[in-house]
Image 1 (cartoon, rainbow, N blue to C red):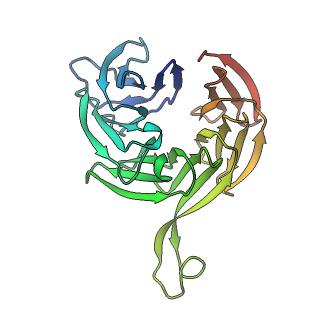
Image 2 (spheres, rainbow, N blue to C red):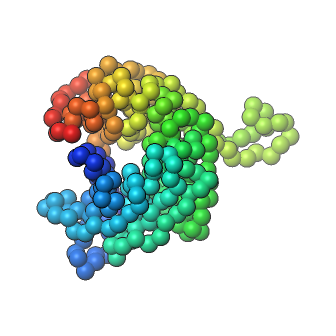
Image 3 (cartoon, one colour):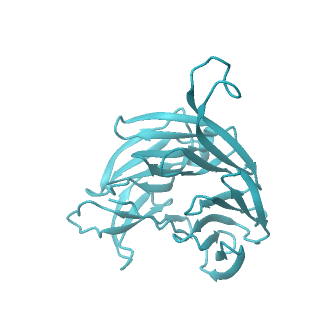
Length: 295
């Protein structure tokens, strides 16, 4: 069944809520709704399953000591929680969403500081901030089956295209965006003459601003938008040309997450500093509204 994501982010004191809608294949004794919200608490070390219509908490499941992000598998049966520790920890928690209980923990070493998560092509992909890298976990083999260094500081959030051929990350302290593409390497430019063709991942690093953390890719895959918490600017990257095409002085200081609406018309940016939700028109790149949602 299709994994539907709402991807809303809320801050309330020390509680960090990652909103994500998932479609479960069957219901438990506690009658989990067909679509549910998954919410993490940093302070209480729990994953809450919430009915997004009634806002009733169905259950709370214990997770590790510093949970930061959560993603559901495509079939909605399991969730993966990154245990971050500011780049020092090395664990993904796997949760059974049907039975509503922890399953097991994945030791991501030698990759430290797992943070950003996505689930694509049956695998869990994650950033590893403490190791300046990204990695991938295959549930079918129960192994970390791939990793790659970015060489960038604080590789924090991650996006993988549906075909698994392109990866995008924001690197917060380097002030860059990585565009990483699975590429067929032919003899010549990237390989010595006479060698066999092979696949490799090639990285293009696009400078933005320090503090660029939250980002999203437009539904048509043409643009990547990210916002800097430090200078409040929005950066628009042309993903085909792999270059920055627009910088918007949006004054969204403290920006921590950015999301397109599913139709690609609007862009939402949340701010930890102001507590505002800023809404932009994606085509005109003009601000439409600011909504005070509190901190």
